[in-house]
Image 1 (cartoon, rainbow, N blue to C red):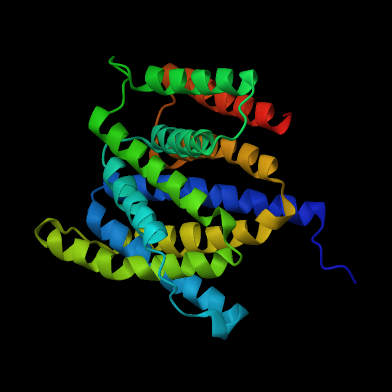
Image 2: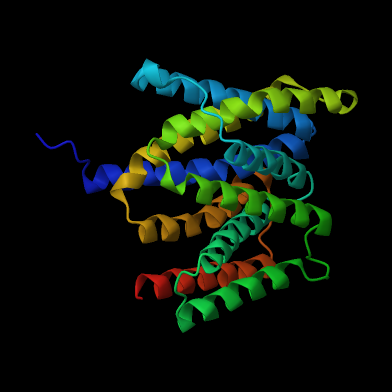
Length: 285
């Protein structure tokens, strides 16, 4: 009997993973917007609950793999992403934050590809220029402009997550490595909580939202994604992730009563369309 999942199963798990990625933006924004938790505590709870969930999943799969394999570059990038992500969502809407995050993740990975002298056909250069123009349009001054410092923090989170993705690209056991990287971040996260102890705000609702982000949207979401990833081509995986900012924007409207501005719509078309052109150009080379 074949163990290869059906197309329907692959499509279903992929959709669940993408919703989980977008849910991180909605859950974080919801927790911080309503003042149920501070950014540092949200980060710590997300990391700890994610680490526990991933450790349990690894142990259920193969207890012999449950140990920390220090990868300081990956751990540092993951920690930087988590911290900057939470800080940025103090002021950014769910959809806007997801677009900035995703845009800079892809721009970082494209930049690293260029540094590694990977071929970039003309249509890919065009797409890169369009995507950069979209980011510039989103953050340009004006009444609908997002908070500049928060946008810069989210851009930093995107660079960190892009670097983390590149570092982990060659992983032979991504679930184990992700669990190990989360566990590696735990002591540093606890230090972060001590440093911001005086600013701590922690309610039952805030704790629940942070645990949901760490255990479900991050831990389970990453586990599902990594299980599905071998059944997708690199191009398919990249293109599918274009939907994450859109899903996050819809979630922001549904759960946070956010409005989708014309600026966000235009910037989304430029950024996501530009990235799609890059992916198409590199697929055809």
